[in-house]
Length: 478
Ligand SMILES: [Zn+2]
Image (cartoon, rainbow, N blue to C red; front, side, top):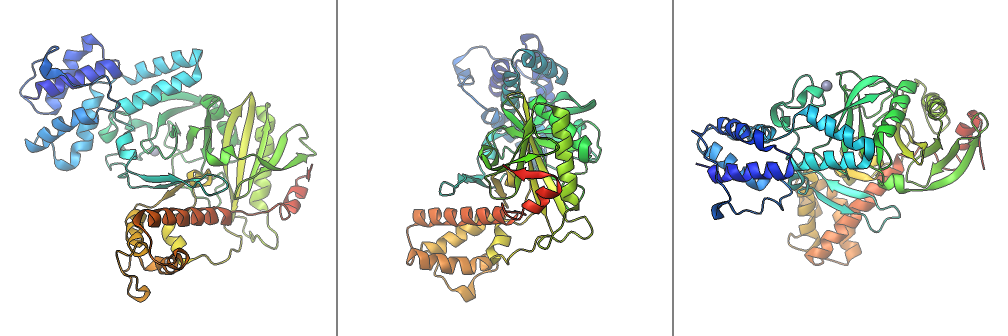
């Protein structure tokens, strides 16, 4: 029973996951035990066995019949299939120490190849499930000046079988639905951290760098020093960022210290300088604002200590700053997100200044439906992650725009009610109902524009209003 399926999976692991011939029989027995089968007889090169395993990019197709059989036979509860999948794959994978050795050996010759190896392994192991990620509704906002990407996240959230105390903890490697997770150890400024790719590939090569201890984030100079060290680790093609640099009111979604990492060319990181400035105290540091929707200050130099020192001064000054537009009387309204990269031997820091104390104009009702949570690092970099329920809401809105459902603003159901004003305006702009495809594209444009406005609203300064802040730091425009 299932001999053919297990043989195919073993062949897949040999081809894609470096399963050694000598480890094959043992792995097969582990799988037999996990699936609660009576036994397994290996099949060799028979026609029966002819599946294009070589061309496969994920184990999903091979796992499907095994999982279906296990559920049918009652060998696994139907809500525990994610754990079973992870356990089966874990039986076929290299051990954490072997992954670490391979990563280190490769990195010593070519750092990018080491990351490529780990990424490929994480995908082929089924931990990063690109089939699941592809379910997310995503598009590029082509009409905008800076091409932000919009992602409506419909991928199921990570399972609840996390190792305590939290989902980021190092101990998740090999546990529950993360049994097939693999990490590599990293020294970050003298501390033990690890790197792994994220299940949710919101953007290219989305990963996390995590402290091996379940410890709250540090801030100030310590945090900036760690970021610079992490930028060294990520190498030429990567970035590393932190959600909120300050304790103050930032979108602190974690009690476990970690950074987000990704591929260098996020929309915000592609943006060039707006205005250039110079610091009297650090005249050698390249400094400017970034031509982006909100307030980003970019600084760069090859001397790590000096860049960290200057960035710390800038953020500390910002945390205590207030003027007639920005109220910050208790010193808790301002915070910053920081992204670090290492480009051509230079440490490049993008500091995104943010505040809850800036008075903003009222926003249209639908904005609260489009973006329900605070802006996180991902959004700020131009990857706008929108809530799952929006996918269904927009499908319903589209039916009004293409005339499938007659529009009556007063009689809208609760889930589309917040979009009443928007639908009314769009119907007017369209000159009535349009084709289904046109309605979809118009809706994308509408969401793009909303994201752009939400991002712009998080700006705290413009070229004029930033002057007193910079002057207080001895920074002048070039
Ligand atoms: Zn933790």
